[in-house]
Amino acid sequence: MGSDKPEMLDADEVDKLKLELNFNDNSFNLGMVGRINEAKGQHLLIESVDVLVKQGMNVHAYFVGHAMEESYLEMLKKDTRERKLENNIHFLGFMKNPHHFYQICDAVVLASKKETFGLVLIEAMQVGTAVIGANSGGVVEIIDDEKTGLLFENQNYESLASSIEKLINNQELALNIAKSGQDKCNEKFSNELQFEKLKNILKELM
Image (cartoon, rainbow, N blue to C red; front, side, top):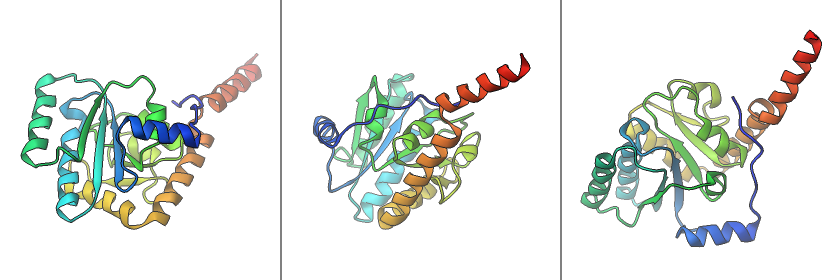
C-alpha cells in the first residue's frame, strides 16, 4: 500500500489555513485524522494533552473525522469540559483534503487500538510532518522508532504524553524524524513508484 503524491501548500496557503482553523503558532499543534470511535483512540490523546497542560505546556489537539459513534463523540466533549480543556481540544469534523491539514500540524498522532496498516501516518510523513503511533499492528512497519517517527505503548496515554513531550523539548529530533519519515515514504510508500515497479514486473513476465 502507498499514497498518491500530495498537493503541497505554499507559505501563504499554510498561513491562511492556520487562520481558518484557529491554529496558534505559539503552541504545539497535534493532529489526529480518522473516524471518531473508541477503537481509534481519540480519548487517549485528550488524556495526554491533559497531562501536558498540567505540566505547563501549551499543547492543542485537533480531531478531523466524522463520528461513527455519536455517544463516543459526546463522551469526548464531556471529558474535555470536565478537564477544562475547551481551549486546547478542537473537533473539526470531516475534512475533504486531510493532506492540507497534515501540513499545518507539528505532529500527527495515530492511537488506534489495532491498526492493520496506518495510511494516515504515511500521508502525514509524505508532507514532512513528524508522526507518533502506537506500537502495534502495521504501524511498526512504518515507524522506525526515533528515526522516522516515535512509537508509544499501545493504549497508554502516559506513554503517548511522553512521546509528545519528547518532540516539544527536542526540536532537532522533531525535524530529523520528519525529514527521515518523508524520505522513507518517498522510497517505499509512493503509489507512483510501486506502480512503476509492478509494471516492470509484468513486462518481465510477458
